Figure 1 (spheres, rainbow, N blue to C red):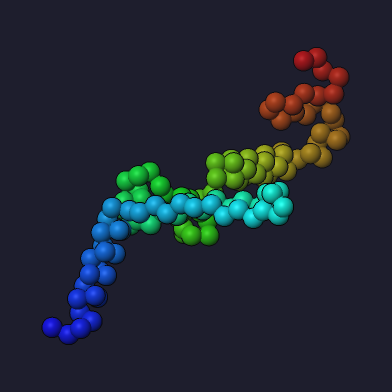
Figure 2 (cartoon, helix red, strand yellow):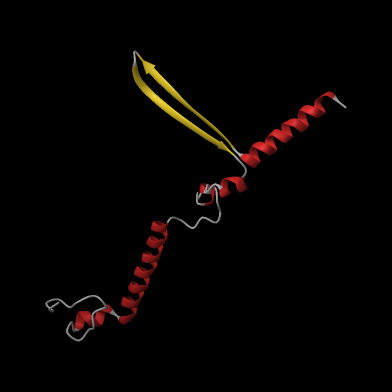
Length: 122
């Protein structure tokens, strides 16, 4: 048996075991000057397979737009797109009804839904 073959297979076994079970590395880095804390960095590293991470409820990469092509945006972004589309549809409807008619005879024109004529009671 060649010299390097046992270390390669054991390294592969260790890597497989780490990815299957997962491993957490935690540590803090503190920078003090004359007993005054200037900076604290807390490190928490989790090394695991994708399947193991999903099993633990970790799936942030699926929702990150820079990492996932399936990302559709946050709920706020989705609502913003929906509202913009509705606004454009309403503008199109107003353009189709002809605002010039309203300018000629404001009493005969029907206001868009949800809007009142000037001076009308609520």
